[in-house]
Amino acid sequence: MAWETIIGLEVHVQLATRSKMFCACPNVFGAPPNTLTCPVCLGLPGVLPALNKQAVLFAIKTAKALDAQVHPCSLFARKNYFYPDLPKGYQISQYEQPLATAGKLRIETSGGTKTIGITRLHLEEDAGKLIHEAEFTRAGASYVDLNRTGVPLMEIVSEPEISTPEEAMAYLRALRELVRYLKVSDGNMEEGSLRCDANVSVRPEGSQTFGTKAELKNMNSIRFVGKALAYEVERQVRVLESGGKIAQETLLWSEKLEKTLPMRSKEEAHDYRYFPEPDILPLTIEGEWIEALPELPWDKRERFKQVYDLTDEESGILTEHPALAEFYEALVDAFPNPKAASNWILVELLKSFRPKMNRLDFFPAVSPKRVARVLSMVEEGVINQNTAKDLLARLLEEDFDPEAFVAQQGLGQISDEKALLAWIDELFERHPSQVNEYLDGKEKVFGFFVGQLMKMSQGKANPRLLNTLLKQKFDARKGAF
Amino acid sequence: MGIEREQVQHIARLSRLALSEEELTLFKGQLARILDYIGMLEELDTSATPPLYHPNAEGLSFREDIPMENGPAVDLKCLAPEFDEGHFLVPSILETNTSEQERV
Image 1 (cartoon, helix red, strand yellow):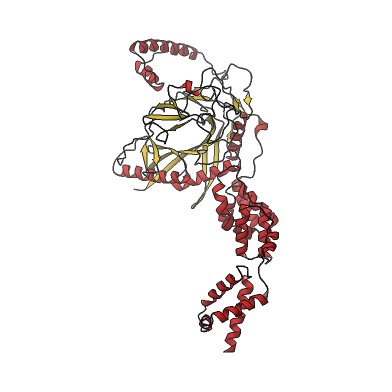
Image 2 (cartoon, rainbow over the protein chains, first blue to last red):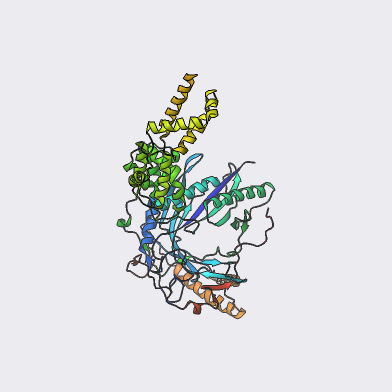
């Protein structure tokens, strides 16, 4: 039987505010445990939450970019559950009237473009972190760090319109890119700034009813989401084809075992007993809060293709992070050869940029103007490609004046015919047998001579001129026979 | 409007409250009276009245996004029965079943 997969994703995005959602504790990652806490986020009696306006503005911005309807009035609610990651005993969230509904997100997959509906986008607070089995922990105890408690979260729920694990991964990539463009989150999955839960079920192809769904929790990389969903789809099909039934359960992906495992800690937690949050008044959105959006990733991608004549792949990579796109445009400004600029970035510079691109404040440390000057020297024939590569690698380490450096170190390309001819003569004298091989028609030996000459020139010979001169010399020899 | 004993037990369990038999009886009665009162309010036809979300007529007041770097103003150690290595300690909570046997 052919099966059809139905996936819906719930993504939690930590907002890049400076302080927490309902108190003034700093919102930063990696501080010593429990140092970023106060009576509000510790859930001590008698405190009142005060809503961070910036968090609301970030959520509105994202909702607008997702083409969602932002509601003029939305409500906060208490979601009650008893678990040590949330000392109040409830999470402040939004339930009946969320901030925004009915959006959409366009994704790119190998099968083309698809639009996934966004059911809702709402604000809530993050919970703390539980640590088990770390170096410092005692057996039989879980350790609680409440630094993350109260960090602003935006929950984005998709319609169950995702049909493959590949589409789920594309959806996450698109969403991560969007929040980075909007500068509302660093979107860093490894640090938990973007977390994904998935509802997944299968049904016979063409069936109108949904199968029983399993919920996959807390997957912390896009790759794991793909693997976990692929595993789970296969498992469900196997169960159904052998006549079994799918249990409605919450699962965790184990990277170590490469399989999904039932989660047992929040068994009864589905009874959340929501009620309106009495400590926070209804949130009314004023028109002037809706800021103009920056150019969105899909628009930028299209523009790069049109204006700079780039391929889908080139413009896709260059627009992956807004800082990289800015860098490219600044480079093209100073070095108006868009194709070459793109090649140099994709081949030479991305190696060192990529590891840093997870950061919201990522900006290539090297000045695009300096890079432009190196590339211009290549184009003008002052230096060759190898020298340019060395210069770029050096520019990534330290700032210096490329032209002055080339002059000072004598790195300029050697285009002096006399010097090159003298080297060729010297080489022919040293390797008469290889010369004869070439003259006997073994053309591969040509490469050997080029390599040797490059070595003699310390990599600085003008390769095109070198080739021409070498050919001429050989032809002269042939003629002499 | 009544409430079943099992419902009271369920709510108590969700809140991790261990209730004695006497307490169960006591709270069952109190909760039933609260529900009766709500039931009485529900008899009113409010279909033409816009919902009042909050008795406070002032609008919601916001906090500007300015972090305070003071650190916790309370002695954390005093807040939990056990505190170690900067963390609060609770009885161990495991997220998955430890059994690694193959599920079909």
